[in-house]
Image (cartoon, rainbow, N blue to C red; front, side):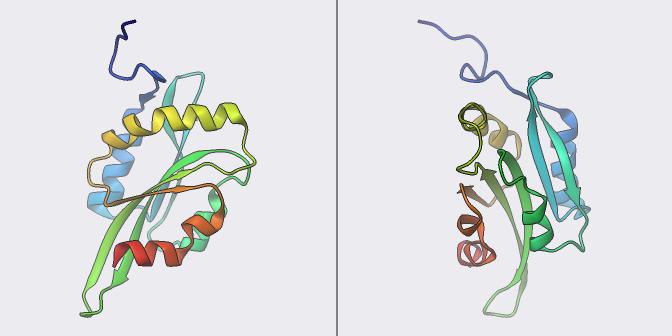
Length: 143
């Protein structure tokens, strides 16, 4: 059996806007977070929502759907024990337990390819319920 193409498992592309929006978060600090969704008609990962630099982690988690999968990046600012201001970018694969099986499969098979397009991610979190991506989880991973 032979496979063609770079992503034989899902064939999902990545919209140029998705990459450029991530770069805005990473380099220009224009966004606190970006939420991405798979557009099944276009067969690509697209930007669903962005959060401004002043938005909180609670704003971010509230923007994720309770019953559907999403990818997200979050720019986490924190102060180290040496009193240094730092920033780490988290990639979050949100796959709630109550989401459709088909959605979970689609997001799971497309994740690695999408993640590779986003150069500069520091940490990755796979979450099936809000407790798995609590702010304390981010703090623990970042320190």
